[in-house]
Image 1 (spheres, rainbow, N blue to C red):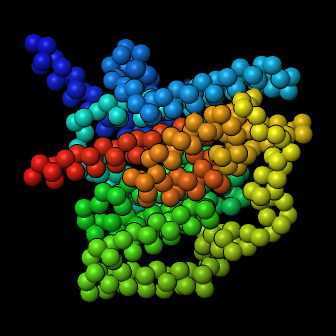
Image 2: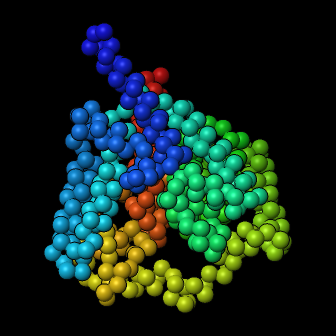
Image 3: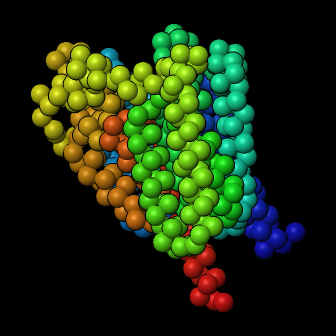
Length: 396
């Protein structure tokens, strides 16, 4: 075997690994001994063996600068008395965050991935999610037990599920599950081939979003749907499209009205309704995000933070926002570099970014490695396939 054949063989293997990484992040459980995606050690090995070609572009420079800011903040936690006991946790979260960018570098280095195969994998994901939806609505307790047994200790705690009956898939936070599905849905909105399939996926996405009971995700879904609908309506102004859209909207209105009117008969519907429309008590009572953010404002933003663990007035305080989390955990230097990277890709990935920005603002996009990694991979793939498509159009 000559060097050229060996190189082609390695490229094919790396392409197959790319598809496996997608399947791993979408469907497989975390590695349980050390919580990380199963595919991460393979990508890390390829990285240290110099098998991933990294471009010295603006993304790389911003990520390196951001990573240095994160690590400096972790080192500073050793110098602060209240934070010294949490140094190991801070280091663990920093490694988790920084290592997620390896997936971005890996997919940037791939040239032979096929858009249709990626979309096929995402369609399979939605078919499996449809199965979870049917099982969850018919037997929520049995479904949660199955998820717990298969996905392990990263899933939602049983006592938390008993409190509000929220679907969380493989995540501990139902909000993360909602934004995870929405970002994949957003990628398909950028790259859809079939209106009928997209309609079915839209319905599945809406039902999942409702089952997670995430108000922020529901708002993101509606915003995505309106923008996509207006865009397609403008591009394909015809009677058939108007009829299909009208039937879909009418079906949703009738279905939602029926479920609300009969919500006493459905424990999940009752839970969704109460969480969505009776949420003011939580906010007024001090349980809302604005109350958490007000508590953070007693701290002065510094160039570098003290790591992931966040103390306010002597007690641990979760920020419930990546914006405030980065600002107070890792400082405004790290936040600035991350925002430049984050917003740099916004225009080309609008439908992926609507749920991502919502999550970044009022939840935590960076806290779960699968959630953040799938976001990074989707924006790389979307931009890569757009460049290929434009090149083919110019050639033809």
